[in-house]
Length: 322
Ligand SMILES: *Cc1c(COP(=O)(O)O)cnc(C)c1O
Image (cartoon, rainbow, N blue to C red; front, side, top):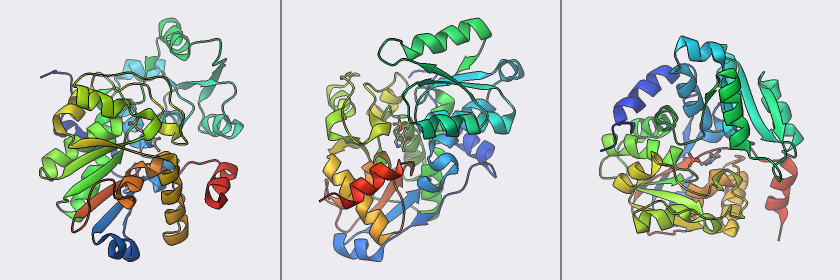
């Protein structure tokens, strides 16, 4: 056992830190979907979380765990997505200086949102510069603490609090579908599910093009891939982490993949039937259940909707494309 791996105790501590700070997001159902599948499906709506995604949980938990010297020096993260906004907002709430390293061609709206939370944005050229080197340079020069997006015990523990809340509300489940990128969300969810509903079969769901998790799970070691091409832009990681992989290997039931087409179908279902905006990556778990990637009939099923941040022009194109 790796002693630095987080445990369910860490998830419990994270949920105490997040109490009254993160939203306790709603759990929703659709009777027409249940009738179609012959199952009971519970959606945990992290698209309604602060910053519009579960990443606020892990980001806040990691920052709240820093000692006073680390807080005084500040933090740095590299991300153009939800992790950047999670760290920026958590830092503002905890009065910590945050620096976010973002590609200069990141969507202007994302840069503006990150600056809007009070973070300093350092831009780089994604074709010429390495963001990790830039971030490590800031760590060296300014004594900042790097907050990674998934491979960090406090981040994993924080992400696990969403499934803890879900299971407290629904009671035991037969299956649970969780989006999978670098595995922070899945490994945290596994710690919670294993403790609260040990018979629940937990599936990680990846985009078909980015199936490094599936490969790693079945090979029994971390397998890296080239940056995949998928509309699930929050799950384009090239490899699982040294902390997330062992937890996934130990507790996941399986890893499955869905196509971009199946993600679009899920997005449309949420818009049309449930009146919810869910981003493509946020639909990974739902697409597996809705497309019956594994047999779901007769089961009590949890689905983690991980986020709702999607560019409106892209979103309307997804909804209206033939
Ligand atoms: C980051 C992210 C994921 C993937 O989470 P990991 O912890 O990297 O596996 C899934 N959905 C959304 C909306 C995200 O922002």
